[in-house]
Amino acid sequence: MSGAGSEHGAFVVAIDGPAAAGKGTLARRLADEFGFAYLDTGSLYRAVALALIRAGLPAPDEAEAEAAARALDFALLASPDLRREETGNLASVVAAMPAVRAALVDAQRQFGARPPGGKPGAVIDGRDIGTVICPDAPVKLFLTASTEARALRRFRELTAKDQPADMARIRAEIEARDARDAGRATAPLKAADDAHLLDTSDLAIEEVFAKAKAIIERARQSRT
Image 1 (cartoon, rainbow, N blue to C red):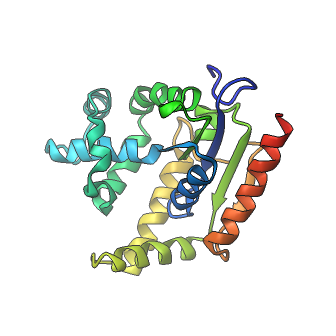
Image 2: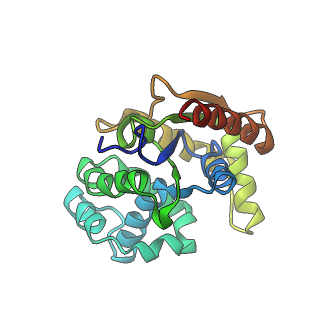
């Protein structure tokens, strides 16, 4: 993989895991702590999904989804509509399409190899960062949590924003997305063999952050 995370390249932290396991919160904290660039790769797929929804294509075929990915307007990454459940559900569908994934792989790898702003490293979170995008990353973290814990987090997130939330529906949607992510033929969700596993079901963010920070510090010291 073109050098991202190699011995003399940028220091890459690859974070993978299912929906609502806490990847984004942890990744942003780690990027701030170490002065690294941050990329939420899931937002790329959400942006493709949002572009399709806005184009009147809520059930696109693979060719339509690939075209949207290759013409992606990165300004969509700042849209609050990215976090809507409709967008997230379609993002999971288009992320299972090989042509869409291929269209976005190069951009993700370049981010890891040459983080923007001349930063010394990158924190990248998604579903296949440690296995496909940055398999040479010096630190790979795989976050997981029980379905119930993840559904409760999403429920609280939505209600805090005064958005409609139904616990049973959220749980069912998470289970469906887990099945799609783990069962897709291209880059299925799974932990890399050398990933550090962190179960966040019963851990506060501060505890997860402390564990991840220690892992990264040890890896950085071993490279000096």
